[in-house]
Image (cartoon, rainbow, N blue to C red; front, side, top):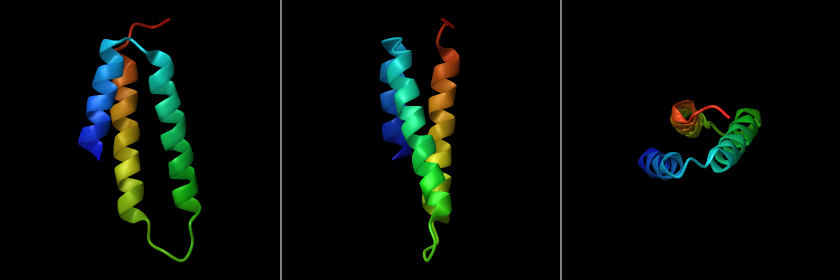
Length: 67
């Protein structure tokens, strides 16, 4: 999935769409918060994947010109 996120982020960076990137980042952070709170299953792999996606999104945001 991370390659998919990379492609999406690259597209939004090319479009200079900070709002879309921030929305994705907010969604992934909420997803991570929910995964950490899960009990009864081991979400380590999913937590690692979502954390990696957050890093990709943050890197994309960092390349945009500050508003």
